[in-house]
Amino acid sequence: MNEVKCECGHVNPIGTVLCEACGRVLDEETKEQKLVDMRYEGTARRSQTYNKTIIDKIWNFFSSVKVGVWLIVLTLVASGIGTIFPQEMYIPPTVPAELHYEEEYGWAGKLYYELGFHNLYSSWWYLILVASIGISLVICSLDRVIPLYRALKTQRVDRHEGFLKRQRVFGITEDADNVDFETLKTRLQERRFNVREENGALLAEKGRFSRWGPYVNHIGLIIFLLGAMLRFVPGMYVDKILWIREGETKEIPGTEGQYYLKSDKFHLDVYDKEKDDKVFEAALEKKGSVVKNFQTDVTLYERSQETLPGEDADLIKIKDHEIRVNQPLKHDSYALYQVDYKLNEFNKMSFKLTRKSDGKEYGDLTIDLYNPKERYDLGNGYIVELKKYLPDFEFDENGVPSTKSRIPNNPAFVFNMITPDKPKGEISFAAIGQNVEAGGGEANIYKMKFNGIEYKNVSALTVRKDETLWFLGLGGAIFMIGVIQGAYWNHRRIWIQRRGQQVWIAAHTNKNWYGLKKDISTTIKDLGLSEPIDQVQEEKST
Image 1 (cartoon, helix red, strand yellow):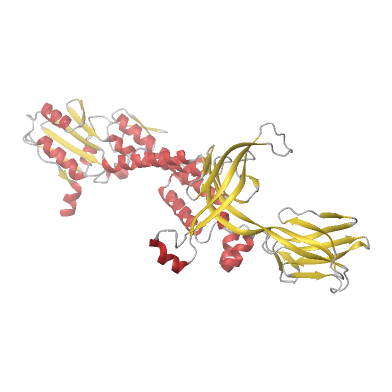
Image 2 (tube, rainbow, N blue to C red; image 1 turned 90 degrees about the horizontal axis):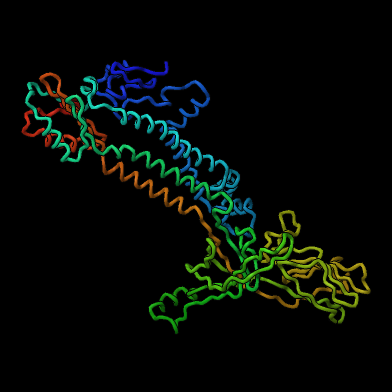
């Protein structure tokens, strides 16, 4: 019951419309049609035959071209929405993402964040969409290419008369006993047809490989999608921002602690109206200061293999490099690009513990704004405790002191000043331009006097690593091969059969019918055979 045996003896899978061997019509509905559908040679496709188990239903769902198109449309729409606002990796690192989108873009930004579009390309539902496209491509291809290959491989030269009559190009020549089949065969071979002969019938075929063009496209797309999904596998793809200050040594993100970078010096050069080319003089007058070059002199280190977990990294110097725009530091599949900078960022602040009555100083302290200590011992019983540190000070909506970010744009401190005469300490709040004391301002004997600030230039470097490029390149190349294969060649077949005193000619191509009819005209010229007619054009004309 799972097979259909044709009168010619060939056994076809259930659901076959045209016998794979002789082309006899096996489907009652097709017998009523004037022309047969040759797109898949009338073969039985699994999606059109089985629909019982859950596996059949999944297969049938993903084998639908409409489903594949809708998946692509949904992915394109989601990708388009993901470009409305910047992705999370491109927003300032000073503000949490949930606050940034709402503050910058209002309710639309808040909705954008809550729906996960802020980190679209690594979100679980976007990955499911991409994976579904890949599954659809695989199942669509298998559902069609295997039956098509089997039908083309098993096709016979001598085809059933019902098959020939239902071809778009078909004709019969009466009283054709003297037709020279050897000349027909020679002429077809001269036009680069592969000619097979069987029982006095000819089958001329060329360009069959073009039928596989769409499936080669699918293979290329599948490889391309695989490369895109591999970007989410650890170690395959890195695209991160490293903010590093002059004199600072930091682990390079994405290297799993293997590589470290030290910023030795940051340079910023601007155009000089007097020294540089006079061509830019007018532009400089209008614009003012224009950056000519900015670069970071760095030293690259590698973590020693002998360093044990938990120990401070034992670093081995690899090389020095000057990172400029479009002149990255490259090493071991990683590349570091200069993308941004920040001048004169607060780095350290100094204070003096001072008695208010006479201004006598009892020691000074310097606070590293990125790594502050909790306790500073000034000697002789004078100690300053840092009770609270607010790097980016502001008052929130309830009037409570808070910080907008971890970047010291507006640092503020709460000190506890312990002295021999005040062993329990005195509380003082200090910020830029502010010094507020507990108890109304007159209760404290001592105060923290601002003594200076140290600045550092900061460089923003993009860290890139992409081991998926060869996947993407290979997939793109295979896709283009499939496009060329299917666009510039076509599958042509000509059947010539002697039936009694008649000669039947039928032909089919997947495109370029004009070229096919020209091949037939050139082949039968001066051989006494009638030109076959194009049944589609004849029907339109009538």
